[in-house]
Length: 59
Image 1 (cartoon, one colour):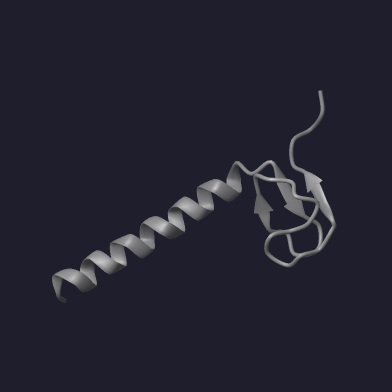
Image 2: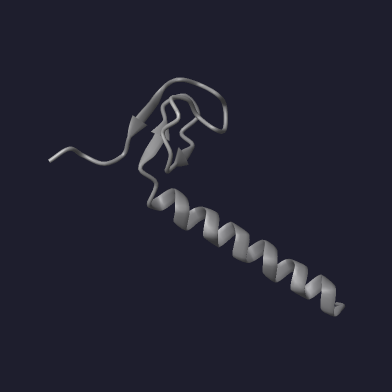
């Protein structure tokens, strides 16, 4: 395996891990496709649905 191929695999692994961590701590989720994200623009950035809800319970 070449150096660039190995580096490419490490970058992809890092990207996947970062995405998983971001989803775990996301403040909003889409009720249509279950995507998780941190900004509430009134619609899901993945599927465009307007079914967005907070993942944080109100205290």
